[in-house]
Length: 313
Ligand SMILES: NC(=O)c1ccc[n+]([C@@H]2O[C@H](COP(=O)([O-])OP(=O)(O)OC[C@H]3O[C@@H](n4cnc5c(N)ncnc54)[C@H](OP(=O)(O)O)[C@@H]3O)[C@@H](O)[C@H]2O)c1
Image (cartoon, rainbow, N blue to C red):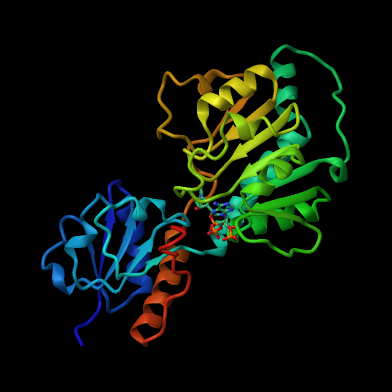
């Protein structure tokens, strides 16, 4: 059997940060970077990818697995020529999960403790105390109770918040009120003082939080989107911020990234923007996880965390 070899495919400049991590985690495996190391294509057995250009993965007939650089795999399933027989593997990394929960806890606390309003008061040199309910009376709702959503939900619960979650399949998580399915989404949203989106982007979730759905949130609710742009209808969100349905939003992801210079979000007084940094993959830990999965495949086992071809996440 020929020795395994690996190609890293990304449209941006992240490879120099990955190269030493891959060499350390995968001694003995030849590592190349697309497009320079593309030939000969038949000998490449693994691909690690971030937003691979459409059609490129189909050029490698020897692939045994395609690994995502991040937790989401929407950027891989977007390729209409994606080889059908090759498993697409999600990144599940506790370093990444921990970072996402930090982001969620940070921004939930900001909204809960009304920090954006105190920031505005400071600009105007205003000394005024704003009422704040105890954490147990603040209802946090997490859309997506997967690897990231569940970790964030548990950490928020540990801080004393009232936590609910919504997913495709019903969950049974102690201390967390679990909703599932489209039919329970309006009731779930109605119970969220702060809604946190941690859903994957799929054909089913794209545009999910549109005007109709946002209108189920209580007046003045906060929205945190750390998942993907495209899940929240940005025009509808702006309208909901204007009419007061949404009191504040923290947005890490957008329909177009980088967020265009003339986008109204930039200067909106009740919007906090971060540049898609909620959870950034750590190449060292991710390379070790990918290496362990390659070891499994080479030993004839199924890799862990294969994304579903039916659900597309
Ligand atoms: N901003 C950033 O820096 C950043 C970083 C990493 C990840 N992300 C995003 O976070 C997403 C979530 O990651 P993860 O690892 O937690 O994914 P995951 O483990 O696959 O969990 C996804 C969750 O969403 C639920 N879900 C999916 N489709 C649904 C639908 N149509 N209706 C209701 N619930 C649905 C799933 O329900 P079931 O449990 O029933 O399957 C699951 O609970 C990623 O896909 C990525 O887009 C963002």
